[in-house]
Image 1 (tube, rainbow, N blue to C red):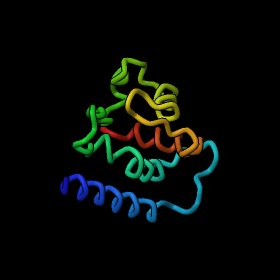
Image 2 (image 1 turned 45 degrees about the vertical axis):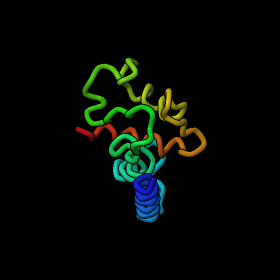
Image 3 (image 1 turned 180 degrees about the vertical axis):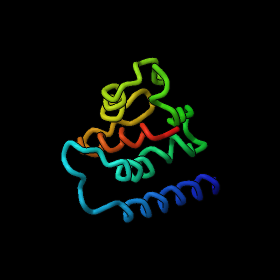
Image 4 (image 1 turned 135 degrees about the vertical axis):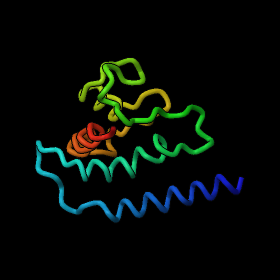
Length: 117
């Protein structure tokens, strides 16, 4: 029980640190900003995909090399549009981020995912 509380406190602490480190200016419309995407990844994706809490029912896939494969872990094509769909709508145990991320945020996040080796 104590380990779960410590893990949650560490996640909250990390999330707050990243939130305050986010750039205050928005990226230009139509252009992707990988550094903003990285900050979004750290805040919204990394806590489950990189260091999943032990109480998750299913281990989320690692996202390194996501676009090097022809397909996503779901079997869908590894395209920007398909990844955008998963981010917006969610998939299985992954929550939907529609309403939590703006369209430019999703583009920035996808640009960052392309850099993961």
